[in-house]
Image (tube, rainbow, N blue to C red; front, side, top):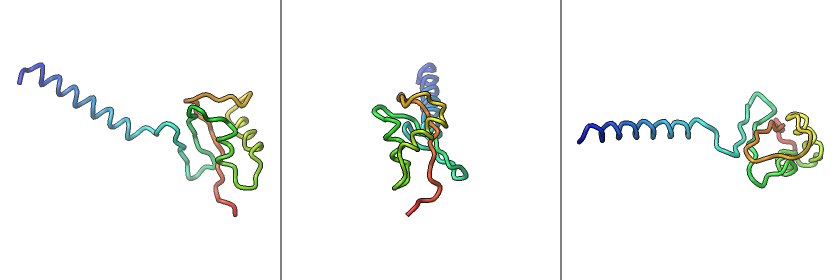
Length: 99
């Protein structure tokens, strides 16, 4: 095999290994990383998400979603409810399900 072809194959294998490693190590888009010792999680905003929808998903049954929206705005220092895809938000989570 020609010398430049061998070098090219090594580079491709190395780059492939790096890409696979990054995919395995980085959290998926739209994921929520929960710290078990914490009562918050980090959420990456997806296209079509609204602050209300995100708050509704984490608000315990029977609680007021408006209060969760206000808490998310406070925790993230948001001056409005406008969010954009790719934005990371600190989200409160209920440490123990009620019911």
